[in-house]
Amino acid sequence: MFTADVANVIQLTDNNNADLFESLKQAYFNVRYKDGYKADIGTAKALYGVIKQLMEVAEKVYARHLLTEGL
Image (cartoon, rainbow, N blue to C red; front, side, top):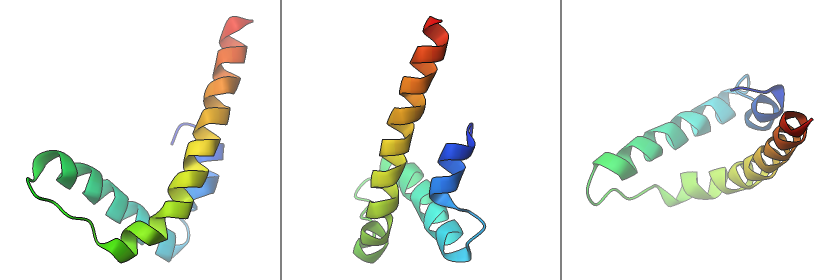
């Protein structure tokens, strides 16, 4: 977590969010190294909103980085 913006999206202090984040990390590993890995549809649906928001925040952080690097 390199910015508070990203940490605020995931809110790891909430146990449910921490579990979802752990599932996301495991899925990231498994999809790369385990043939035929299939994610749990319930977990994927639960993560969808968080991932969408995370992408929006990451794009804003990146844009802010480009602005500050260009100055």
